[in-house]
Structures are given as C-alpha cells and as structure tokens.
Amino acid sequence: MSKNKVLLTDPLDDNNPITVQVLGICSALAITVQLKAAIVMSLSVVAVMAASNVTISILRDLIPNRIRIIVQLVVVASMVVLVDQVLRAYAYDVSKELSIFIGLIITNCIVMGRLEAFALGNGVWRSFLDGVGNAFGYAWILILVAFFRELFGSGKLLGIQVIPDFIYEMGYVDNGLMLLSPMALITVGLIIWVQRSRNRKLIEQG
Amino acid sequence: MNRDSNVYTFTFAALMVFVVASVLAFTSFSLKDLQNENVRKEKMQNILSTVGIQTDREGAEKLFDQYIKEQLAVQSDGSIDNSVNVFKEVKLALELKKSPDSQDFPLYVAEIDSEKFYIIPIRGNGLWNAIFGYISLKEDLNTIKGVVFDHVGETAGLGAEITQDWFIERFIDEKLFDANRNLMGITVSKTNNDPSNLDKTDHEVDAISGATITGDGVTDMIKERITHYVPYFEFIKSTNSIAAMSGNNLNLN
Image 1 (cartoon, rainbow over the protein chains, first blue to last red):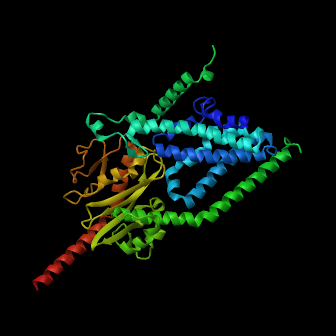
Image 2 (image 1 turned 45 degrees about the vertical axis):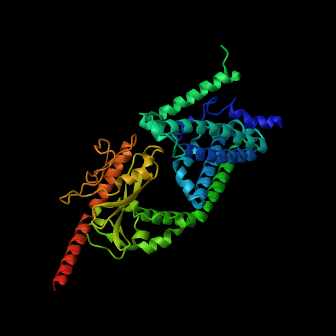
Image 3 (image 1 turned 120 degrees about the horizontal axis):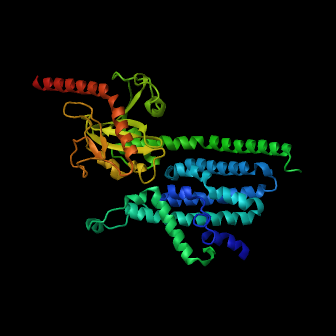
C-alpha cells in the first residue's frame, strides 16, 4: 500500500511534473493569469489524465509497439473531445469558461509523458493513482502561480478585488508585467528555487 | 500473437480508428440538440442583456418573446426583407463572408415600458479569433443603451476582459454619430484624454492594457457593422419626423 501511496505523493514534491521534470510548462505559462481558469484547467487535467492512464493501462498488452505514441495521442485526444462535448451539453457555462484550454490539454506533455513512462508498463489501479498524482502535482503549481499572478497583476483573487482601495490611493499600482507570460516563467523559477532550497533530494551533486 | 507484425499493427490501427470515430460521432450526434439549445438561449440572453434585462438561460425564451417586438432583416439599401427569419436563419459569421450588397443585416427591436431600443449584432476579428456581440441603441439611433461582447479565443486576463462588466459599462450613453450625423463609431483608445469616461460625446472609451489588438477589433467591428444600418436609420428618422409633423398638424386642426 505504501508503494501505491508514493504514486500519489511523489509527484507533489520530489518528482513534480512542472518544477522537477519541467513538463507541461506551456500551459502553466499560458493560463495562469487568473486563478479561476487555472482551477478549472487543473480539474479537467485530473479527469483526462486519470481516464487516459486507465485506458492505456487496460490496452497495454494489445497496443503494437511501433504505433504506441499514435495510440496514446488518439486516446488523449478523444477523451478531451468527449469531455468538451459533454460539458457543452450539460455544463455550458463551465465549457465557455474553459474555451480553448480544454483543447490544449491534448498538447500537455505530462499526459503523454505519464502514458509513455508509466501506464504502458503498469496495472490499472496503479496507473490511475499515478495519473491522479501527477495531475495534482501539476495542479497545485498551476494554482500557486495563478494566485501570485492574479494577486499582483490585477489585485484580485477569483475575480474579486482583494487589495483594498486605500492602498491604491496611497499610490500602489498593479504590476501589468505579472499578466504577461514572462512573469509566469519567473514565478515558476522562484517556486523551483524555494523547493530546491527546502528539499535536499533535489540538490545535484557536483 | 506477434505484436510487431505489420498485419497486427494495421488491424489494430484500423479497429482503433473505427471505434474512436464511432464513439465520437455518436456522442456528438446525441448531444447536438442540447448543445444547440444552449447556444440559442445564450443568444437570447445576450440580446436581452444589452437592453438591461438580465436573465438565466431558462427564463430567456419567455422574456425574449415578451420584449423583442420585431426581428428585421435590413438590406444594404435600407429596405427590409420580410421573407427572412432573422433569429434562426441569419448567421453573422456566414453573412460577413458575402459582399455587403447581398448580406442580411439583422436588427432586433425591443420595446420596454413603451420605449424602443434597436439591437444590432456585431462581429469582427480580435487577436486570435472572432469577437462578436450586440449593441443596443436608444430611440434617437445614436446613444448606446448597452453592449455585450464575447469572443472565441482571446487571451484570458487581457483580450478576454472585453466581456467584463467594467469594460462594457464604458460604452453606455456614448454616441455613435457626431453633431453632423457622420458615423464616428466608438474608438477603444489607448490615448484617451477622458479615462474616467465623463465625456459621452468623444466617441472614445478607455482601452485595456495589453489588449491592443482586441480593442482595435472592437473599434473596427462596431464601425463596420453600424455603417450598413445607416440607410435604414435615415429611413426611420424621416418616417418619424413625418409622423411627428402630421401629429402636429392634427393638433393644429
């Protein structure tokens, strides 16, 4: 059991997909301007990763080795399209909120990475845990970055103003740079810095 | 079974494509009606919100029937084509591909507390993809009652902010025409001298930082769309003034 638990906890810190493996950076830069979008994106990634990891794990003894990447891509893409279609019919407002992001999940390197590295060689339950664990590892970094970007970029959290008016009156100005992609990269860099200084396992020898 | 043989690989690929295509086609087909219904009601919601009526999707249809009195297909010469069911048949995305002479220009006329509002659908290009919305005019066919914008894929936090209340509120009471009845449109301006938007006759609203191209798109689509309605507006104005004059005559008699 503890071996299975590691599958969930490892990607949160020691083997975080974003800060350690540096996967899925593209979407971490693109959709962290607002906290809300980051949260919805995270939830969708959890759903898609769990589902596609399970599917590939079930099919792992049937998939021809030479076209396995194509098979993975087809599975992920159809999961994403399915999620999108169902949302559009039953949760139209959420689907509008997500707009292009849901399509972007297909290009998320973490999804393909976990399919290739884990689901192809492991059982269904373990693959499910691995998918969920990695998705959460991705999610909390995404949400953390979005928290700082929305707070300092717009003075808001989840669209609600949190920096009180009197601070603006004293001359404080929102930092417009926080809304642009470069600051997402710098924020991720700062998180990696903090993480490495706290986590001894991540310090390279040499 | 040899998983590396060509026959196996081809068979697997063919089966996979067949299964995936069937599942996706089935899902898309069975959810189509629900999805279209959502889009249709959202359109009603948007049209209503420009004249200040906020409603959830479920209540949209009833209020739409209650307040929207006319749905007109305006032609480029200012006449009306009565054979067109505007709400159902006119898709602005397709109309924009035609030459202006052969387009139908949809116009919705709302009547609230015996006040008339003219609602015009607009559509243009943002940075990444289409932007669209509705703009409603008061009875003088000049003052903006309200607008609503939406987009396909503008950047979250930047261009996508055009949908926000604080942005669309800037358009309220702005004037489209100058004193000589020339169409000025509304410019989303980065060099606005009136950021708190007190001057409602400057034909300008303050832009959003970091969303220059989307803002220019809003400017362009408003002016481009309204241009085509000018002949019809002139027609309404002339009939209104004739009606007013004959009303005066009646009073004199």
